[in-house]
Amino acid sequence: MRVIETIQEMRTFVSAARKQGKSIALVPTMGALHEGHLALMRCAKAQCDIVITSIFVNPTQFGPQEDLACYPRDLAGDSEKASGVGVDAIFHPTVAEMYPNRYASYVYVEEITDKLCGLSRPGHFRGVTTVVSKLFNIVQPDKAFFGQKDAQQVLVIDQMVRDLNMNVQLEIVPIVREDDGLAMSSRNRYLSTEERSAALVLSQSLSLAERLVHEGERDIAKIRAAVVSVITEQPLANLEYVEIYSYPELESASTLSKKALLALAVRFGTTRLIDNIILEAS
Ligand code: PAF
Figure (cartoon, rainbow, N blue to C red):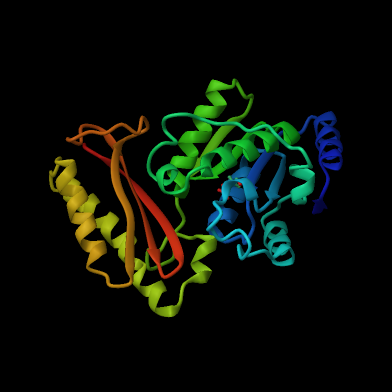
């Protein structure tokens, strides 16, 4: 497995693979790889000849008060994990390589970035769509793999790909959870033992919502209130948002008619976790 640090070298690697007629998958990540990322890489390997994963802690998607400086970085550990699932190359550029002096161009998707994480993390999705566009331009993959854990990110990138006629097929991989239900996240490692066990309230509240829908509840305010009440009963949980929107449009609705995204963000100490589920009225 190659570790490539420059855009030029990445382009040379991709063009050699293309000359051999190989299909190319890209799995964009910020590193600190866990089973959720490895699931993306395994899917990518099953569908394409060459798998490239980017490991780049993208500064433009972090707000000034966020965890950019202490975001976990472990290239040696990540390389071992990626090579274990058959990744062919890691793209690991420096910040200066991606955002040289006088960098001035950004990609911005309107409307669906105005809610959920877009509200609590202003500028976050502009950073995501900018770096993902750059990665698509550099690697020019046939397919790119993203996790459903970041449900809004998936919708924003999908909107960008359609609006800007990007020639890449998006593949969305289901959330991978620990045995006890906690969704895998690079930020889980920040949690203390007490916070880690308190964080189970997230998947428990989503399961409750799913059960209510299964039992026939269609009133979105009631489903939301039930989720909020489970989370706020947990003393270590500091609720940022719980919202239910039509899926995939992300529009407000009072009644669950077909699919809806129930998404939440909750802080445990200084650690912000997100989780979600698609609710479906049968
Ligand atoms: O989901 C992530 O890890 C990041 O937002 C992404 C897509 C790699 C862009 O930096």
